[in-house]
Image (cartoon, rainbow, N blue to C red; front, side, top):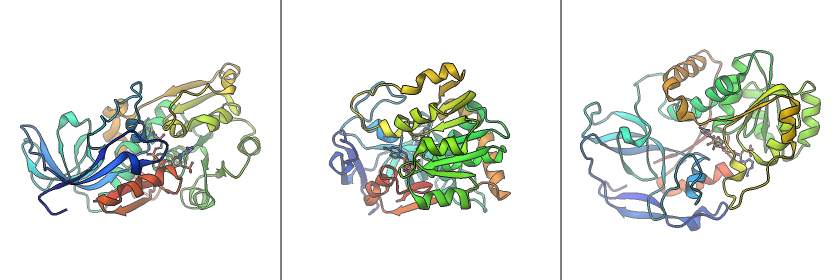
Length: 339
Ligand SMILES: NC(=O)c1ccc[n+]([C@@H]2O[C@H](COP(=O)([O-])OP(=O)(O)OC[C@H]3O[C@@H](n4cnc5c(N)ncnc54)[C@H](OP(=O)(O)O)[C@@H]3O)[C@@H](O)[C@H]2O)c1
């Protein structure tokens, strides 16, 4: 960043599969925008890499968020610093969590969707406000507590369990006294879940037979399934539900690159047989609770009962390398770009 231009990633065309290099262009000489009344100019410090943004790159208009228009900068969440303010509550140097662009500079205001000044707390690193607090933490908590209604002693299964959202969701369930089983795609990620995050078991769903492992580990069935992936994994879990099971649909990452809708799960009939509930949820719907949720997670963290991992990739120019980690399954915890 030379201070006079605004480097930014523009969505030049809709991606096919995980070919983000053909879809996104890195522009070196964008203009730095000027804030209007009520806006701040934010210099990006950390860009949040979120699997859900793959949906916004696609053409579908029936998602929870309209697609990013082709020819415009890619949107995303970030932590940044105010460098110019025309907002009464923000001063130069304030740190905030907001929506902006994959760019050096973004404009932000209440209209951004997320626009929160960050407290200055000596014992909490800035990245923690995206890796533990923020939307991943709120989603994990709301999905396990409000949607999954997980109770002490119940068996909870989490998919993409070593990812940003899943690793937190499993720990929320563990802190409630549940028995927690995480699904992930690699042995090192399985070990991280059981040895460091306190999951009771981890299943490598790519190497092991998921249905067989669930029979062994969950003879009484799965009470709560926190679903991050959809597709074949969701279908298999539906065949292993306990009576009155709850399935909290957080995300469907296995389907975000699909161009056509797939047939529904073959175990759909088990919803009736097990009197089960399936509920999709979206973390902004729980926004009124986010302060309280964040406090709970930070308190657990300070008490040594809740942890997180950040994978930092340096340089705005390396954003796509960071983004790929979410889709090639190599990430453990939260991926961010340090701009
Ligand atoms: N509802 C909401 O409000 C909300 C909010 C935040 C996030 N989410 C959802 O939460 C999920 C996780 O998002 P995140 O940003 O935290 O990412 P993440 O879990 O850190 O990374 C994505 C993970 O998904 C798994 N994955 C990637 N491609 C896959 C595929 N084709 N099939 C199966 N698994 C695949 C990989 O884990 P493994 O290889 O270990 O399986 C990967 O590590 C996404 O579905 C996202 O949309 C929803």
